[in-house]
Structure formats: structure tokens, C-alpha cells
Amino acid sequence: MPIASINNTLPGYDHLTLKSRLSFRFAYENHQNDFDWFIKADDDTFLIIENLKLFLSKQNKSEPITFGYNFKLYVPNGYHSGGASYVLSREALKRFYLANNDSKSQCREDGGSEDIEIAKCLRSVGVLLGKSIDQHKRERFHPLNLNDHFFGRVPDWLGQYAENQPLF
Image (cartoon, rainbow, N blue to C red; front, side):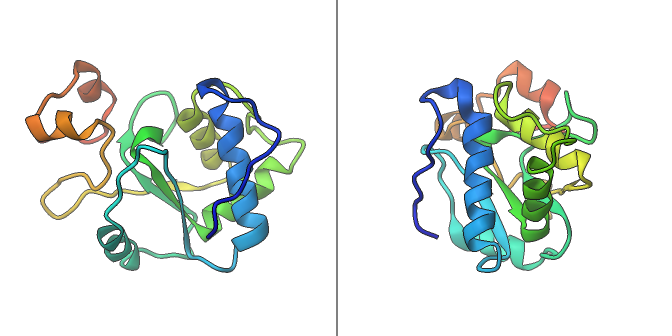
């Protein structure tokens, strides 16, 4: 998918919810039938595409589901860390798009914490929070920077937020 210019946004961290909504809208309106999975990633996200493709190849692409680093607080049934990136199935993207075009929707247009607000919207339309740990109970998505992971520096808050306790 080509990089798209997302207009009608303001710069800065405070508008990540709107930027993600508009990005998902662009993806749905222009590429909904071109891909099975859609990823939300930041400019500092590092992905090993081969590993992600292998993991997703074993998932049901028709199911309304997302995958990422699971947090257990703030949203019933959890949410994914936005900094770790997260992946939506085509059906999840479709439901998100339709909810954001419904005037009765519970989806917030902007503000708040992007990962929490997107998750609230997704859960309100029946999108499931998938599990992405491997057979050794290790995470496939990582919310900390590389040095923190490499040296095992786990902030106290991570143990409180994480659905699966960090294995450092």
C-alpha cells in the first residue's frame, strides 16, 4: 500500500486517535479488498515482516480480530499497546470503518489515548482481542524500546498493565 497523505489533522501526539481513524478510513476506502490484514505502526516501529506474515498465516483472516501487545486495564476485554503496533483483520477494519460512519457509534473522533479509544470502538462492534504469544509464552509485539527489552529493564507499570507477565 502506498504512503497516503492524511489531511485534516493537526500535528502532535494529542491527535493520534484522529490520525489513526483517518488512516484506517483511507485503508478501507482504497484497499479493503487488496489485503487480509492491516497494521497500525508508528514511525519508530521495527517489524520483522517474515515473522508477522508467518504468524498471521495461521490466523483466521475472516474473523473480526486484532493482534498486538495486550494490556488488561481501561477497556473491557483489553486493548493493544499502540506503541507496539497492532494488526486488524479485514473484517475488523470493516467494522471499525462502519462504526466510525455511524452517528450513533460509541467511537471517539479524536483525543484520549489512541490505543484505548480505538480499542473501545473495536470492542463496541464485536471485534475480538487476539492472543499473539508464541509457543514459549513470549510476546510477538513489544511495547518497550529495544534497549529495555535487550537488557531486561522492565518498568513497574508494565507488570500492572500487561495481560501476560513479562518474561525478563
